[in-house]
Every structure is written in C-alpha cells, then in structure tokens.
Image 1 (spheres, rainbow, N blue to C red):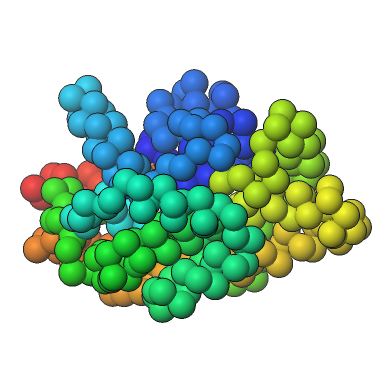
Image 2: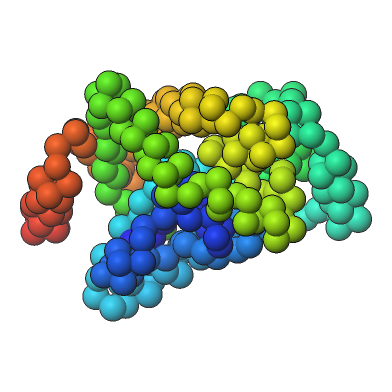
Length: 288
C-alpha cells in the first residue's frame, strides 16, 4: 500500500491524518508514511520520485502496488509525470522563501491566488510553491504543469470510491468524533510543547489548525468539533469536485495512454468492496 496523502508523510501526526494503525501496517506493508518531521517540506515531485521507487520494489517482489489517498496533486504527479522545472537563482529563491515564511497563511494564500488563478487551496507549502514559481519564472505553476509536463510511464487503473452525500456526512462526523476521542488535542499539544511552530507545515492541516486555534484561545473548546467538521466537509466537497474533473468520464488520458476509471459505490461493506475489486482485477489481468 502506497499512501498518496500529503499529511500522512509527517511523523507523529497520526490521529488527525487517520494513519493505518500498527496492526494494519504489520499485516500489509505500507509506504509513504512518517517520512519527514512536521515543518519540513515534502513536495508532490518528491512523492512521485519516492513512489516510483516503491512501485519498482513492490513489482520486483512479484506483487502489485496499490496507491491510496486523496491528495490529487500527488496522484497526478505520479501518474502523469512532473513538469520540467527551470533552473532558479539560489539567492533569489532563498530571499523569496524567507518572505513567504514571514506572511500569515491567509496573506500567502491570497498572493498565490493572485499569481495563479488556478490555485484554490492546499496549505502554506502549496501556496508558497505557487508564489515561488510564479515570481521566479514569470509563469504560474498551473502553466508549467500544463505546458511543460514530462510524460508519466505508469498505466494506472483508477478506482474512484463514491458514497451518497448523506452517508459521507455521517462518516465524516464519526471520523471527527473518533479523532477527538482518540486524543487529537493531546497530539497537537505534544508537538507544540516540543517546539514545533503553530503554523508549521503539517499542523496547518484540517483538524490540526482548528486545535491550534482552540489552544490559542481563538476557538472555544465547545466549538472545536463543529469547526473541524465544517472544514472537513468543505475539503471533501473540493476533493470530490477535483477528482470528478480529473477523472471526468470512465476513462482518463495519462500521457498518450487511456487509463481505465471505475466509479465504485463505497457505501457497502469493506469485504464486499474488496471482493468486487479483486474480481474485476482478475478479469482485467486475465484479458491482458
């Protein structure tokens, strides 16, 4: 299992990112978890390079890798390839990095949106990346991703899990309740006590930033659950829209290949879903 989740790469951020527990990781090998410390940058490009290595290792062991997660940019970078980044002047880049770090998160996101109209959201790291590329190259990051992309070499089979809106909302509420009961607030407090900045990459994710705001007195403790749930629902809606646009029909073009896309109703039991997926996979591989 290869996690394509931009938050699960951070060590110690376990509850708020819903990482697989130790028992699950012991039963099935996982990659893409606990790679960097909170505050350290981990880009989609780095993920694509790392994941390519994990895929090669998995196939060398005569197994098929499964890439899971909801960070669309990671999946796109892996499947479709990276854009050819021009050389940057190191001094200008460092100056720009320091300037971005001096900005409040909302101001940084506002700059990213002005410089790249295609930028929607994604935390400090993605906003800083959008600002950096636009100011250093004269072209928006979305332009580079569209016009200067190197072809990917994978032939993926996409399984797009969907559920009715009311089922999704129930599951999101249950997830938030579980995280709070499991000790999300204590997890955040541990990192802050260890010296991690309140606005560090990782702690700016959904759930974490609301807890930070609560600990700083900006959100009442009684309002914490609802604040996290509202942010989670908004993100889920954006995520669903993003994937539906990327996987618009039952096929998706990756490079010059057509990658099959399967929309699957995930409101059934995990066992039923696994059985159906394995059956379809066997049918596809038998027909190769």
